[in-house]
Image (cartoon, rainbow, N blue to C red; front, top):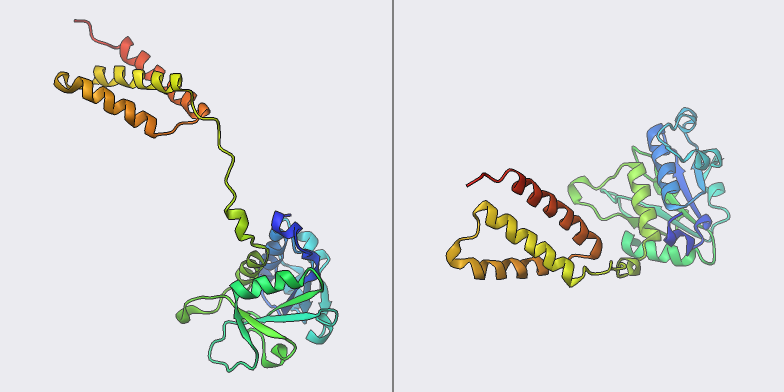
Length: 250
């Protein structure tokens, strides 16, 4: 389970698919739920064949096996204190507050700490109907370009769940740095490069001193760590040996 999902009550989120028809979409939604650690899938009036043949639920069979079926939206959201519908808007006139995913995801994440939340997704062809939306407290949309606003059902579920568990502070964490390479290793790399470049004819005698100093500065700007410096030394050592072995006799 993702770290962010552990910090919130993921089981309190009920992903509700209303009248889903495509088995691939149902499977993809279940897979996204498994990816992000949300276990409870609810289906309202699903097409039976589609539900039972959701082959795209790779490694998410448990989500499908535990999924609950309901005849109506009323029953599917009965135990939830907050009901949020998703919509691409289109040309319809909405009677509910509409929030972008970035804000809606944060509100849902906070609410999960204290009460169950239902997140509704409509059928592939028509989305949520006006009657379906009447059960919602507010609506949420994924920002997308106006010319192509609707998304695949499985993809929409994945994007919404990611936003709910997303933890912006995690991206600010500084990764553990590896131990910097010792100065002696850096100088050894410099010496190998000097030898190889001299042998190749890159270093012109008239500017030999300044070229060697330039190489020394260049190597240090790489800021190699201890492990990487060992790798560089191994590669350069092999190149130098190969060049010396095939050095033409004068």
